[in-house]
Image (cartoon, rainbow, N blue to C red; front, side, top):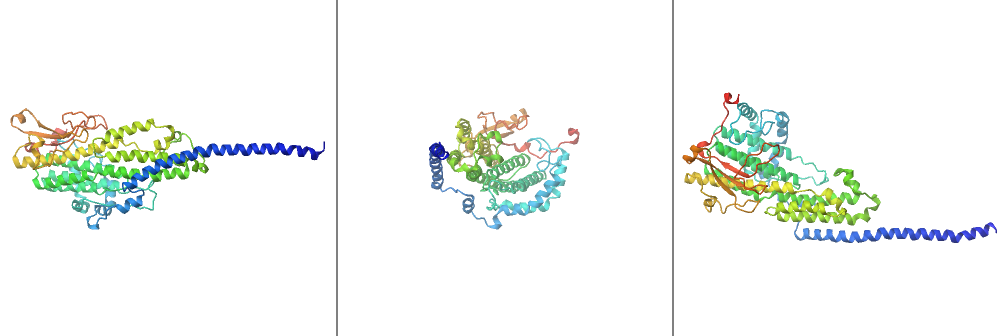
Length: 489
């Protein structure tokens, strides 16, 4: 057989193998394309449903839309501008005094427990510190009449990596005002002290509407400092009725602003650019958020189109669960919903691995928000009880006695949707005989158990008191106490 004949015999064999390769490649393409198309249809349908719900509720889908909807605040009413102008001074005093061992709040020292006397060295340090902060306090005091603020947001910066430069000096301003309030009541100026408590509440209000959850949590901490300061001021002085009524209104306003719900809405909005990173870079883009062992598999960037349905499906689940929590925020079912969601995350199929990495666990934050609401409600109810005492000369026998002249209705405990608890507590046997006592208005707290108004934190670190509430001393027991040096020794 000639060479030409041999080559002609090999043509059919090469053609056969070429056909097999082509068929194999087509089969492989179909094996990828059909599931990818199916997954894309499912993911797109799930995401479109969530986007439609947001559009129907007139919710923003971009941070630019969020900013466009925020109310404009005139410069002379914008507390954020005042805080921004004082930022350099606040940062400077933090660098100078942040490690001071005798200064509470702004330094490393802890405030004495409620009702305990102040160490003399601590009070002297506070007095000396505040003597050097007169100009800064004068700048901040104007916030007393500014319940709203708006920090400008740079929309040109990626929202995922956008810095939050406002938080540290907002907290610093609140701590400075709290120390000044305690110094004022020690010097007998209760009215000025309560004015500063109003300023602290407005400092927390400067973060209302900020497009991130962290700002909401800081705002809650500033409010908590305001309530703590009011409680200490009331235990040391004898206020008049008008400032108390104004503070009640401010506490009610802070609760109605619902900063945690705003933070959740911002967190939901943040999920969209987070998943956009995965659309563009694949799971490798998650290296900033997760360890390598938390990402079960990755795919080449060239196959992003094939897994886009998977990304849509995970994003839709995140928007769905955040929407459920937002809908119940501010109600008694918020904590059960948040905890149920945590359990649901663990039970989801493996293809929700992106969701597990990027979706925040919010049960602890939801508990803290409920405790925060309880604290605000207890504080304003206590101020109503103080106004009742100033008018009648005695404590109310029950919180219902405050209705309707002092409060419209007894506020509910956010942990069980029952009215807040009330307790009249004699301080000693002699006090019992002479009808001298202090009162406690409280919520049952996270454990769901009525511990009788136990507001003292356990000795274990990071443990919180069993109940959440506010105490008022009888007038005979009030006064700012500084420990006797001999007793300190």
